[in-house]
Image (cartoon, one colour):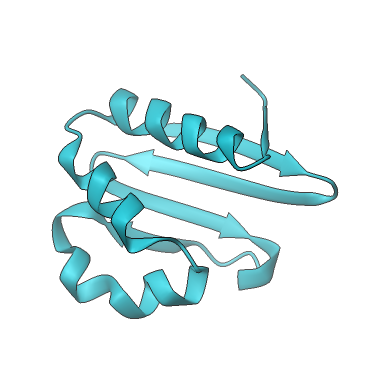
Length: 88
């Protein structure tokens, strides 16, 4: 399992990658993890809409195979949108 934490201002996002399952932990979701299985994206539409993630971005993630590739891509996309990675 890989854990990545990002911050922007006072907002904090924690992302856990366990195989092909990505868990998002944010204050907006009352610190309840939102798990998205990359192999079952068609069944996860409601969760994707709740978090406000671009579905095309998740489809790109689903093309990646290893946890490390997914983690690197998530890190790149978050940093591109203004988030700063913490706890390297």
